[in-house]
Structure formats: structure tokens, C-alpha cells
Image (cartoon, rainbow, N blue to C red; front, top):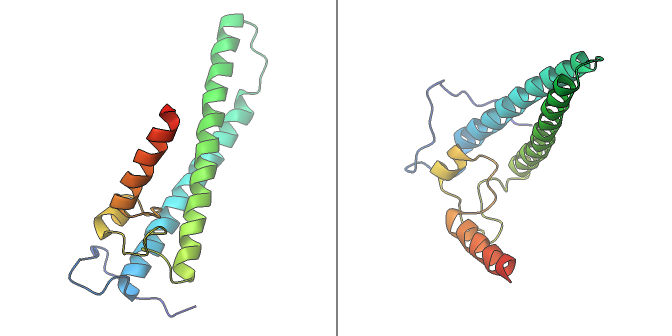
Length: 140
């Protein structure tokens, strides 16, 4: 592993610097790690809440409401689990030097797109093409 690159807290990757230079790579690594830590904190809170909620509620309406809340929490937790897997995949791409490049075209993904969605694997154009193809096949 490389020595840690110093980044000021207000650093934002810019289009006028070399794409995926050490500072940009470190910026996105930190962004992904912080996002993952937040999700894991939320997960721990969800698990604690579900364990606390596992109590006997005599009123049937209250129990139904509680079950609905639990189902929603579990769906949210499942989405978070999938998101964490995508974050881990992005971190692997960083380690392998492939981060920031479109899986379909090999072209750089725009820094704005990566900043907004650091787990992106497709450029905006490739993503739009993919979604159009998916929509066409779904309509059949």
C-alpha cells in the first residue's frame, strides 16, 4: 500500500488535473470508506432496533404496524447490504487501478458523476445506453 496522500479537507477533484492521479484516488477512497462506515453504523442501529422490537404486543393493530415497520427495516437493510457490496467492489477497483473508468467503453467516467455516485461503473453515456436497452427489453 502506498504512503497516504495528504488531502486538505476542502479538496475537490478538478477536470484540469490528471485523471485518477494519487490525490483523486485517495479522495474517492476516503469518500467510499466514509460512506461504508455510515452504512455500517446505520446497520448496527437497525439491528438493535429490531432486537428491541422483538417483544409481545397484545393489540393486533399495533402488532401489524410493528410487523410492517420491521419488514420495511429489513428491506432497507437489504438495500444497504447490496450498496456495501458495491462500495467494496469500487474499493477493489481502486486497489487494482481500474477505478473511474467505464466498464463498457474503457473511457474515464466524469469526475462530477463519480463525486455524485462514487460506485458508478459506467460513464453517463454508457449508462443511458444500458438503460434504453433495458427498457426496450422490458417492454417486450
